[in-house]
Image (cartoon, rainbow, N blue to C red; front, side):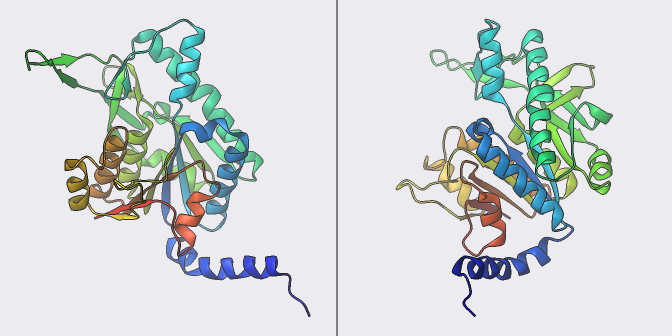
Length: 296
């Protein structure tokens, strides 16, 4: 009997994945999905299939999505100019309404649709539903280059998670469904706050005591100065890489989110390229790995 090499490779892949499947059965994975991968239908389908597979093998996936480019496009259509401070969009009352409409509406339900089409059962919510993410207004200061005096910057309705009520997520996951969460929260003042999706995912992962936090982004992970992927990092090494400028720009808040999540009890966090098909499965269920792993 001649065995098809393709079928043999599939069987070997399953065998390689077995110990990882056993290790993570019953665990929670929090996945932040965003960036340019969200605009690619083929990648969205692959992502949805991966999430459904995780649920099918006994892992509890929790998806938190971004939507910055889509918010920007909608604001542009409406003729509203966007201003950014430290990568955060200054959000007045009108912008906050648009952000909630785009995030909790179009993007959230599209992602729910992809997961359902892949055979899963997804439920789309935001942090306002069940009051499960309480937010506080983000405070930022900026140093004047001439006088060197720091001044407060008002970002408007930009928030950060203060409290996560995990019972809402536990109820959804326990019912066999996959939570798909828009990064919107509510403050004690009753106002709606737009929250950075990475920050939201990290806070939720910490509250759930997740086994893994995945940040799907537009780069392979953390690169050294020669462009080589750094696959394994601890907080002490991260501090040194920030000090010498290896970790800079938009990677800094992602790294800070990962370090905070690990400090809050998440076993490990991974930064990996969401543009690579099945990158999350390669990272978790093969010996090869696919991104940068941050752990205590």
